[in-house]
Length: 175
Image (cartoon, rainbow, N blue to C red; front, side, top):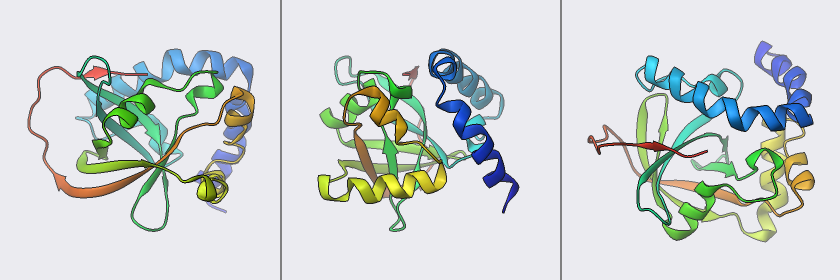
């Protein structure tokens, strides 16, 4: 078993605790943003344990560019699966509303960007998607059970890229 797999199995139970779920949404986005800035947008803390990306969307209400740091799971067909768990909170995260309003987005993985189109995982494929996600992060679906809602699962299909993104002015971080 790889060191990364052992670390995941040891850390995963901690991520399901009430304390982690309270602290993580307050601290992790700021830590990820700082590490990203220091590394020239090439390093994510979460990428030490899991596949990680930065989702770049347009705000559904504001139209502003939003960046969200997310775990993703490769689906085996060149797409990324992302889950709107929001640390088991009872509301869907803002980025899911953004994708529902405008499914065309960008993702950044290790400093490289792709244009993607998001689609909800169909109901008949949700269990298979969750099984794939939980092979990467054991017990992750507990966030759905504990939130009391059906977590939105998206498939991010690359439509172009990789490319070097043009400067766009201010980028806001969405949590």
